[in-house]
Image (cartoon, rainbow, N blue to C red):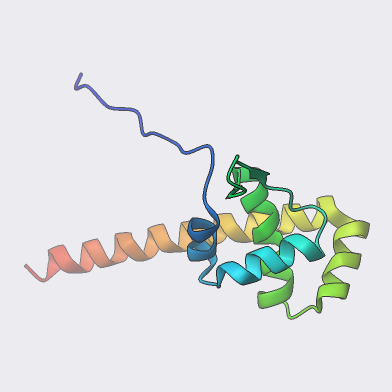
Amino acid sequence: MPYKEKEIEKKYYSIGEVAAMFKVATSLIRYWEGEFDIIKPKKDKKGNRRFTKEDIEKIRLIYHLVKEKGYTLQGAQEIIKKDMHQINDKAGIIGKLHEIKGFLEDLRNNINGSNNQ
């Protein structure tokens, strides 16, 4: 059985890394932090924000509501206050479906690539 190295998972992400994940400006992440009380990143001694996976999932939820569904910030805030669990479930399902779609597209491209050789 071959040796398999464990993948190292990061515990904290910088604001730049989080902004890159969503293809938005870092200023938007800072703005949302002020507007939505569910985003509370830890800050180091220098004041740099350190986001956990939970923080990123909350940002993903806000991104989904504001950028993908078209809600205003106030509308997104109201939905989060009323139906946080239901929205988290839907956003999680959508995220998984995007992962599956990406996997299937990669698989198709690999199959098509091997057929052309």
